[in-house]
Length: 512
Image (cartoon, rainbow, N blue to C red; front, top):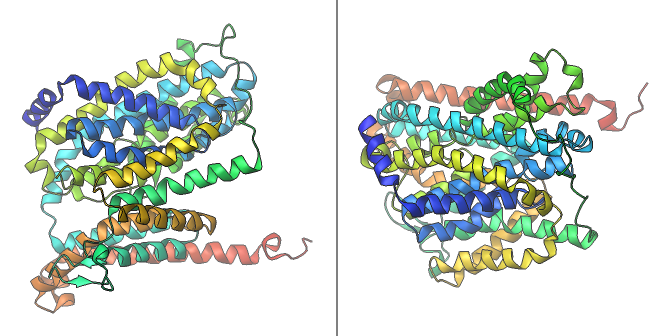
């Protein structure tokens, strides 16, 4: 492992890698600081650019956007009480109150330091845990991998926004979409209805840009149609005494370490994400605090807890992606597209075949945190003004980027039709409270799932149940885990619906 780390360090020693990481960090913070424009949207739009760069340039570029965007969302959350990203929702509990007291700069600096610390520590942990997990993953055969993918899809569907049934329905729809084109076992054409455009299947890039970026653009246009206001005036960051002092950071350091641990664990779970980690870190900080009554009223420790936790998710999300080929959230789904475009198929064989390159990318994440600290500190006053930038001037540029990115990779006009189709689909899915993440995840994982299930059936010689519970006990145990997982989420969904039916407020009865 250490030899691969050293080789990876030598591979990383190139100026263009550090240059694009800096651009990515700045761009990510810019997008994150704009309420309504998400980090996922920015990564989806930038994804086509990374295809034409070296893997050690294109993928770190996306990673820089990712890291910068998660922190960037805290800027409007603190200054104007509007989270720039979902990961910054917990930051609005205390950030705006600090800004109203004239401590906006202090809150932003605490958010920056907590973000960098949480991200850095989790990246280092990821660097050293990736090898043993990859060695275990090498022991996973087709029967086990097929069940792991099914468990991941169930967890992702359950963790999605909206009802459990909607999440499962979107996952099933994603599987059906992936079956258009050629099957991965017999290479027979199916579900094309005689269309040559569908023979090679639905292209991933227009789908991802369509469902992740277009609905965000349409939502911004809706808000602009309702109001031309650009937002509240940001807090004045030039007031004296507004800087963060060392004793204040030291007071919050235990909370930052706790939230980092929470975010690291949650990051390794498919479907959980930054928002869950931020609220978990915030709740733990409030529970362990000697003064919990100050939380929600402008407590600096609350900002530190939320930001350390949501940024600590960044590194561990790559563990299931790199070792099993399973993306855990929207961002890793986009990164999977970048890996595949560069001929790097994440999974059990990736580390053994491209070990130095993988470690170079992990080292790039660690080095990016140091650059993140410097760029973030210098640019705080700049991004404090960006929160009020009118979206009207940015929307045409983003729309143009979306169409150009979808077209340039294959130079096929049909991809623009797919872009519009999935953009409209994503927009209405959002309106009806259907989360598109399970659909995209299922679309990506379904070919692997189908291939491994086909291999398993061949290995079992048609007697699948006996094979699973006699010769492949590990796969049988995982199937029991799958049924237990489905039962748990089903029971949880039933209890939630039952409580809603029994609540007189929700059913419209009079409250005694």
